[in-house]
Image 1 (tube, rainbow, N blue to C red):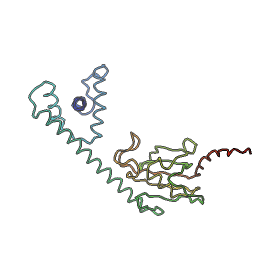
Image 2 (spheres, helix red, strand yellow; image 1 turned 60 degrees about the vertical axis):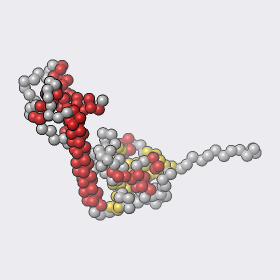
Image 3 (tube, one colour; image 1 turned 45 degrees about the vertical axis):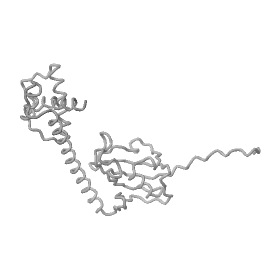
Image 4 (cartoon, rainbow, N blue to C red; image 1 turned 180 degrees about the vertical axis):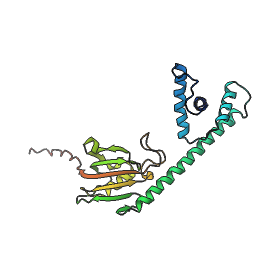
Length: 238
């Protein structure tokens, strides 16, 4: 199944690489050309995002030979191995670039006045210091917060919802939990959470890319008290 999907991807990608710009000799108003162009456009963007460097002439010759069932330069197994290796190499290169970018940002941030680093690699800046208690990992905290990427894109904010959140610390990413446990109730901190303490090399869906440092501005409003268990009656009337 994977091989079939991969072959289809390369076939569709060829639809968009035959010329620079939009070809004037194709009527894109028709159903088949328009659908074909849409598939090619989307697959082409995926290949570009994967960081693959394609020789268009060789690509099209391989496509033509396979489609017309002519003799090919290599057999299917060798072709599949080459394609897989190319994807793995491109992914490794992208990962190295993203890690280098993150490391540079963290080093620059750590040098800023007022920023403190913990042994784990978490960076934080105290914006306001409170005088209340500090939470533990088993506590539920009431917070106002905003989470952003290093490019400034906000991916979550209780401020925008105008409603604080109650969050169990044992159910969040390690960097967030550690940062909150540094705070006294009433404090406001900015946390710089390395990807190793957040979503790592995978990221989180389409919102948080791999190797993303997360920047949280957090106000610790309160520690939510535990529910007081109902005291069983000892048999006497009160």
